[in-house]
Image 1 (cartoon, rainbow, N blue to C red):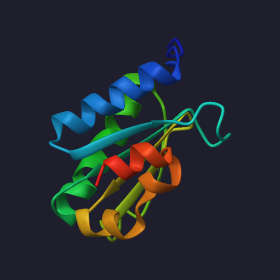
Image 2: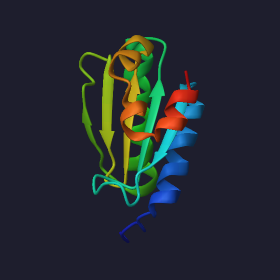
Image 3: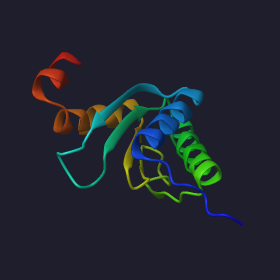
Image 4: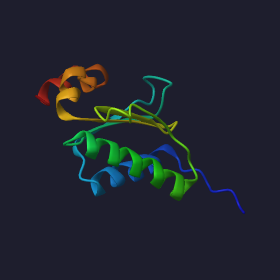
Length: 120
């Protein structure tokens, strides 16, 4: 069986955004991390309406990445469903329940001040 071609970070990002849109993620924000940190090229932050939706979106995203690219992603936080982190290597995905997202305010840590300020 031939090895699957690994997508570049832009292709991976587009695939992740499409998966989240298919699963009705809310308030999806993408942050370009290139040149800012070595943790990845992009960060995606999204919300789900319930712990069940957050967990389901994370499961489906991980399965789609495995199926379409043969890419295994590390996943943390799925047991509680308040905040799930999915590390695909090039793209870090955070899926929150809205009140948990509001509490941590990750966008404010990573977006420029003028962008984060206007999001409120």
